[in-house]
Each structure stands twice: as C-alpha cells, then as structure tokens.
Length: 210
Ligand code: HEM
Ligand code: HEM
Image 1 (cartoon, protein in one colour):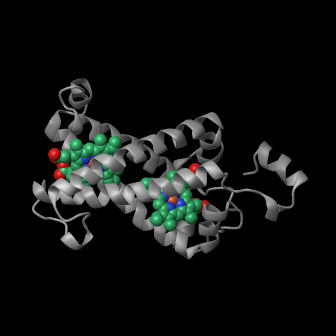
Image 2 (cartoon, helix red, strand yellow; image 1 turned 90 degrees about the horizontal axis):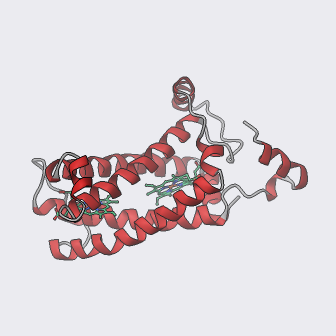
C-alpha cells in the first residue's frame, strides 16, 4: 500500500535515498533489544530461585548466576526498558507511524500472507511496507511489552500498586502473567531474528535507516 507520505517522498527523492526507519526508531529499537536480553536473562535467574513450573533454566543462559545479582540487573535494566519503550510508543503514536505502518490489520490478510510466507512466495521488495504477518507480530509484541511492564510493576510494588495487582488477579496470577508475557516475547524474538537474517537487507535498514 502506498501512503500519501510515501508518494510525496517518492516524487522528490530517488528510492535508494528514502529513509525506511527514522533515527528514533533505530535507536529505540536497538536500546530495547539490549534491555530485553538483560531482562530475559536476569528474569530466568529470578525464576530459578522459585520456579513456577517443574523446570529451571540452565545457568549458562541466565544472567549473573545468582539471585541477588539477577535482581540488581532486572531492577536496573527495567528503567532503560520502560523509559525507552515509552519514548518509542509516544513517538509511534504522535508521528502516526503506528497508524501508517501497523494498521489496518485484517485476519484474512494475515492468513494469506502467512501461507505465502511458508511457501516462500512472499515478496520483500518494499521494506517500507510491512506485510500483514509483520503487522500482527509487531503490534502483538508491543502489546506484550505493555503487559510485561504492567505485570512487572504489579509484582514489584504489590502494596503501593494494589489496584494494578488486583486487576491482574492478585500477586500469584500476576507472576504467571509476567512469565507468559516473557514466553511470548522470547518466541517472537526467535522468529524475528531468524527472519532478519533470512532477509539481510531488512537488518541493514534497521541499522543504517535505508
Ligand atoms: C518494568 C519492567 C519490569 C519490572 C518492574 C519487572 C519486575 C519483576 C519482579 C518484581 C520480578 C519478581 C521478583 C520476585 O519474584 O521476587 C520479576 C520476575 C521476572 N521477570 Fe520481570 N520485570 C519487568 C520486565 C521484565 C521483562 C521485559 C522480562 C522479559 C522479557 C521479564 C522477565 C521476568 C521473569 C522471567 C521473571 C521470573 C518470573 C517468576 O518466576 O516470577 N521482566 N520481574
Ligand atoms: C537482537 C535482536 C533483534 C534483531 C536482529 C532485530 C531486527 C529487526 C529488524 C531487521 C527489523 C526491521 C524488520 C522489518 O523490516 O520488518 C526490526 C523491526 C522491529 N523489531 Fe526487531 N530485532 C531484534 C530485537 C527485537 C526485540 C527484542 C523486539 C521487541 C521485543 C523487537 C521488536 C521490533 C519491532 C516492534 C519492530 C518494528 C519497528 C517499527 O517499524 O516501528 N526487535 N527488528
């Protein structure tokens, strides 16, 4: 889909000069990627101290190897993650990027594009336009990001934020919400990174902007 802004830009600059991802998207994206890895690694170590399920995460993939260290990592990186995430969401809404790039999103198109992707028939000619599967995944992970921050706050300050904790079903339920949001983000990340390396020019665009 060609938006009005795209059309206008196409008229004044050759396509190779067009910026696909403005600097604020690239900066917040990579800060988020680093912060997320720290949060996942430390979160797994915290989980190991009192597992919700009959398994633990191998020490080789957790951050810092002991509970107190992991908690310090978690509570330090959360500020980076939350402030950076707020900037990204605020600018995504204010600049109209979310509306332009991630909407509209129709279930029939997601199914069609998913079939095409699995048959390796999905074109990636125009990196400035996301296909329906990308739209769904990006919107989904932004939502998971909001849920993980909200549930994290609910288990961090269950007394001060008791309304939020109650909204999530109480302290124990909020822990499960936090865990499943982490699982969704990690699943997204695996697919996302595989796709980035299968379509390397998309990775370049997220680094250089075009
Ligand atoms: C503002 C953001 C966040 C806050 C305030 C927060 C806070 C917390 C707190 C308080 C705990 C529990 C500590 C305990 O049980 O004593 C926790 C556990 C955990 N966090 Fe976060 N967190 C945040 C973001 C994240 C993110 C982004 C991830 C991963 C993507 C994550 C993954 C985990 C995991 C896996 C656990 C262990 C789950 C459990 O066993 O309860 N957290 N977090
Ligand atoms: C080191 C790991 C990562 C790599 C290599 C990577 C790579 C990329 C690339 C190449 C794009 C542009 C792809 C495209 O054209 O569709 C992109 C976009 C995006 N990535 Fe990542 N990413 C990483 C981590 C993450 C994480 C941890 C999250 C969130 C939890 C995330 C969320 C997003 C979102 C929401 C977009 C769309 C941004 C927008 O257009 O506003 N990425 N990523």
